[in-house]
Image (cartoon, rainbow, N blue to C red; front, side, top):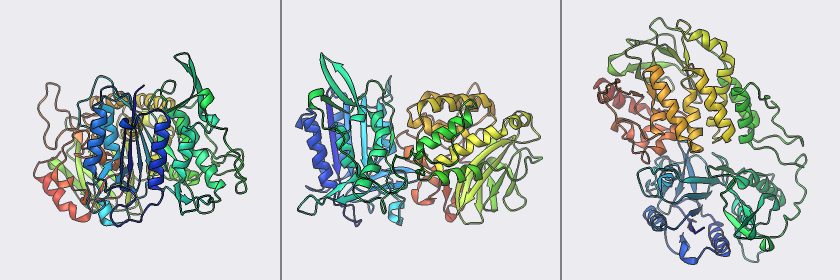
Length: 595
């Protein structure tokens, strides 16, 4: 298998603090690649140890490697500053954050890598995933690093490895064995040991061409790196001040794909003993992702036992974030407010009241009690419309009103954290919904809490169970399809997303925008073209979940100018706009520019 490597190291981004472990990580990863037999001509290094690094250079390097028709695997390693904007990752290059384009949009790059000609792409992100702490960082839009090509017959497999959970920093430490002040990344240190075969539990033996090899597979790294990083934090006596849990998004074949290979007689030494850690840390805690996955599986499949509510393993180690996750599931699954309006459509909002509202296409809005909005003029033949609402907390939101459904939205700390659609109790779907209400609300709140905490992805078996669960609901819970769609996108399951979108449109007469976006079918703003089967209407006219914005460019979506400027959005799980954006969106709605 011919392999290529692209190494990107940015120690200094704009005026941000200097990262002292970056160049060490680049040098050591290059040495590992050479040791794997990857020729120097197939290893490209962009590092500010030599000169500044910019988006056009990254694109050029990736393009040159991708256009070598013989390359079967590309490994991209980034070390530097990262930022989580709208629940999506951006790698900051030398002129960021002052230059919002001098960054790599990781989510968009993954989409384009799937369309590229390299069958297997592995992207390693040794960067923080924290929220922006400045106005300039909030404006980061970034650039995709791969060619924009039409989708091929078979999508490439793209595995992404993150040094930490969404919202967390990635840490570096000083090496006391080095005479000079040498700093190393905790994550890169452990990752390179694993790739060098120094952790036998991650190795799998295979025979190729009559030779016996130990290989390191992506799925082994996904499961193995979190406890190994935790052990290293303990070994370096950093556990009192450092918390870091790696995550991964693995879509490659678990039985065929590998990222490192060693002849059996060349494999590295056994895993060295790990010094004792803090009290109660005798065994690694399960990851929050595994807890979320178990909770979701039990919610969508009654045959699966519900997970422990204590969120501790047999050794008594608490799952980091487990209690917060459990609390979020419980609060989001609570029912509240009325279950119908005589008009047949409307909203109920907790955590904020609505001070002004306007509907697209002339639908009438009526403000009732604080947080209650009744929508008129929707019916079976016109089943949905976008509604703009200004909240008492300042920002504004745009949500679809769906005929026959009550939209329940939750605002916490001024941010929109959940949107749920449930049939009204005056409609035919209500009886079927109530028969499964507890199951539906538990599954949806589990998906919502996971998205809110940045726990991406789910195992393939849980994804399939979730898909079957959504199919069985027959339109009783349109909002869960959005949460699930992004999880399916992380697994490369576009077919499942497409199926959900098609069913939703056939069932409701409209489809939620994100389902169209994630399959490359997002329509431009404005009235849809005529169709023999009626126009396919997507609502609203932009991504409802914030993480969708990072994908608009890669999927070729055209966004209306009223909401296209990143500075018009504020950090939130679900899309929210700044107070001064209300007038601009209102004008677009009243002018008939959007549905």
